[in-house]
Amino acid sequence: MKVRDILRKKGGAVETVRPGETVSALCKRLRNARIGALIVGQDGTHMEGIVSERDVVACIAEHGARATTMKLADIMTTRVTTCSEDDNLSSIARKMTQQRFRHIPVMKGGRLTGVVSIGDIVQNRLEEVELEAGVLRDIALVSH
Image (tube, rainbow, N blue to C red):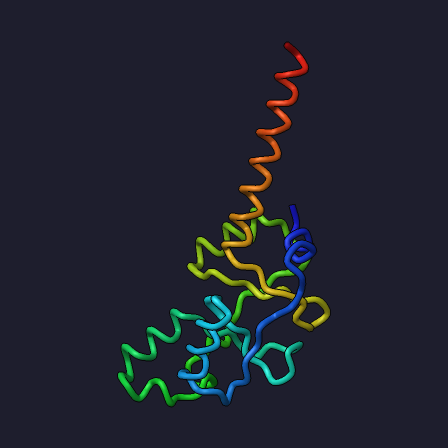
């Protein structure tokens, strides 16, 4: 399976936030969208960084209550690992596990085309396993 297979199912819509937004505003967006990270950028197609719940926790641990008024440009991760639509899901899952991140932006020609989460990969794998089990049951029924 490829990254494009997940994007085909979930779509390429990407939640983004501007670097000048505050940590407080980010937290509200994450809660309301029920997601764990947002891509940081000015226009929704070019990425300047990514900011996750983990970045917020680190900011609060370091700056206390002042963290809520800080700008995302000050806390976002700027060295972001990305992937392409042609990448294999198993290699992406391995990379995410080894480097300990849960969201990977998908890029094509320097433009953001989607985001894949570890949850998307797990869901995809569960669907594959359920399909394989169904096929095996059907084969077993036919052979009896």
